[in-house]
Amino acid sequence: MEGIYCGPPPVPHAIWASWNFDPYLLGGLLLLAAVAGRDRTGAAAVGVLVVAFVSPLCALSSALFSARVVHHLLLVAVAAPLFAWSMPAWRTRNPGLSFTVSTAVLWVWHVPSAYDLALSHMGVYWLMQVSLVTSALWYWRDVFAADRSPVEALALVVAGFTQMGMLGAILTFAPQQLYAAHAVAPLAWSLTPLADQQLGGLLMWVPAGLPYAVAAGAAARRGWSDLKGRGA
Image (tube, rainbow, N blue to C red; front, side, top):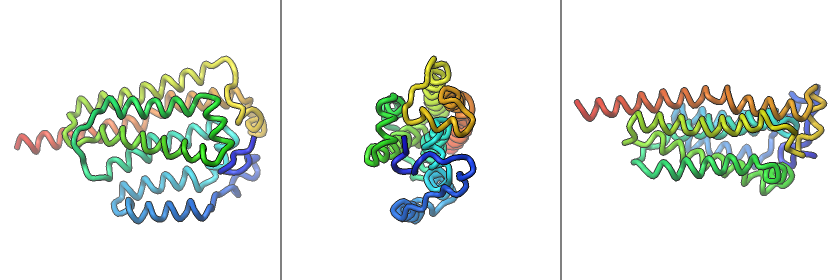
């Protein structure tokens, strides 16, 4: 099956020629850079989106489920917290709601029927991307809320990584390959479709903890600084 947006699944020898120079995408990223790239954190977030959508990772995610997992992790666990951190601080909202919605969005898009539809229909593909980023941004904004205590922020980050790890474990130990979109293409990369899926699950289960750990440290540092400032 061909990925409708990022192009057909590339073979290994062609991967470094598989850049995405869609003018609408590049225009949107330039506009976003003008708005959010005025500080280094916002600029870094835009850079992560460039890696996700412009670099050959976009095409590779048409071929390999494991590459799609990396793509999604860049959106929800790297770009979204960077954008959230770069925005003006806001007051506490209902963190349970943002956590629930962002978790539901992530899990729903990994239901095989929803996932395969997203990789075969342009509109659904972009609905997947936008909903993943915006729901994750909402969650991270609540993590970094101005009056969030360090303990609360850490609990939210742990909850976010826990649900990510649970999904990764399910995918790792699934007895069969789940996604029709990746039923054939991994073979060109010397991976069986099931091994590719297991690799994606492991990436979601273990290495995904690194950006969550960094975010937890940043939230705790900001929280303690705010507490000290109020106590001074």
